[in-house]
Image (cartoon, rainbow, N blue to C red):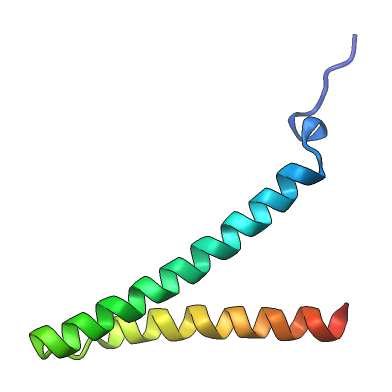
Length: 73
């Protein structure tokens, strides 16, 4: 009797869907942070440095990862 690992039943389709959903979640999170930053600035007149930092970090990580994967393979 052999016990199967939980990860052994996962195939390439699951991993591809996970990659796409994670990427989409990152983009939506960055856009939402930028939209909330704009709302707070234009409507409330408050400059939120924390939202700027979150949006810039998400955009920077996304661009750095795209550049890394472009040149590395």
